[in-house]
Image 1 (spheres, helix red, strand yellow):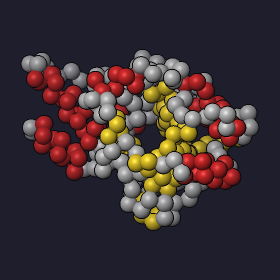
Image 2: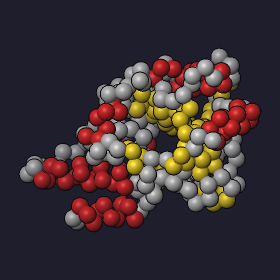
Image 3: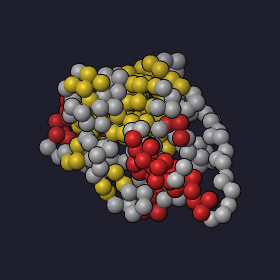
Length: 262
């Protein structure tokens, strides 16, 4: 099948175009060079970075409950990550700063607003805000990583019909457009998505390769890891935000890097 037909089929199947372009590029690069296609080695799972005692993750200021966990890939559904009051306060901080969400072009590194991601979002640098400082510390304890390895908290608002088509959170190291961001702290290794409100209908976080759908619940979260100690990237963590059916959806996202993010 020609590359343009594969790309069209993946886009029609609701995959993020940037991800589809990456898959097609990798598939046909070897063919264009006259080389046999090299199959990737299976992802090697080690000990998850997220740590818990039984069904709890004890942080310095809050006990987080573990509701669901998978080991391969590493996915955990957590509850009691933020209080209702903290959720409301984060929404209030972000509401007046929202702008159309963009994605990073794998070819050029430019930020592009595309119809595959139809939310509005805002980054919340910690500064001297005591709430954001507290949340960054708590999330670092949940993810078992230094605070400095986290990108700024990112709030997203999805209205009815808004979605984010399936995509990976890591950056393809072979894509020239990702070179600059990879210099700012290395690869992304894990993601924590915290739900800031109860969604009236739909808006689930979906993992199409796992057949898993996480329903938003205020104060709860889904966590997943996608890079091991050997630098392999776990394609099974492909995920997306399903369209909101009624009401709206607010989420808080933390992306964790290999090294200190700058």
